[in-house]
Image 1 (spheres, rainbow, N blue to C red):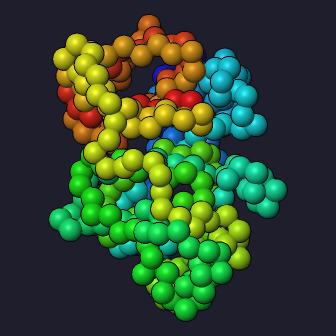
Image 2: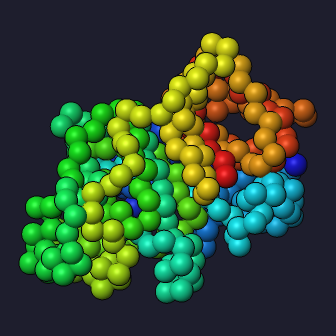
Length: 317
């Protein structure tokens, strides 16, 4: 086993922009890139290995070959690979939406629910997003406001700045706003229930589907309780700094402000996504260079040294 550099599946939803092509170097014929799935092992998108003897194979294929030793005991307890990590470029605002929890999603959709974390990598002046509600309301009022298009009157609009963090627990109403680039660490699920799409038309010229009944079933109709914004304990490791972005039974995510060397050697796998700068990864038997947008899957127990200067998103379960 060895660390594998991944080519990300790319998505071109109607709200996406060009930053992931022009600033992050994702090569594609798509006019826009809404999402880059930088760690993906899902039926809707699978990363492809770009280095070493596994070059050309999907991450799913590699993990079948390497077995549970590549992901570690904790990740192996999940029924399938537990994480999906995305870079999201919102040139326009995303739909108002919600994700179900595991129990509901497994029963209704046949896959995990989705708890996720947003890390604001960049944003335009005045950018804002929706994070939960401003007050507690009943399910009846929630349904009425969806159907009479007044739901935004009780949404919690939050101005954002670079570096802000939001923990989006399953059942939390949310929407990424226009002009925001986000790194998202989430459960390995693609189940989303749209509450409102603001009357927007899809690529086929028709309104995109809403999922109102399911959203009513799963939404927590109250304000969020988890602190957000400029949160997260910071610790020093040599000249580098590590900020804890989120930790829960499903995943842990950290932002590494790398200045020099940083060693990774975990019982489970580690995902390292370069958000800025130039970073080298070295291990027994190999090394490679990474730039903005590069994604490295480091198998469990493979001691790997990151060196250079830049910001790296580190995620694990």
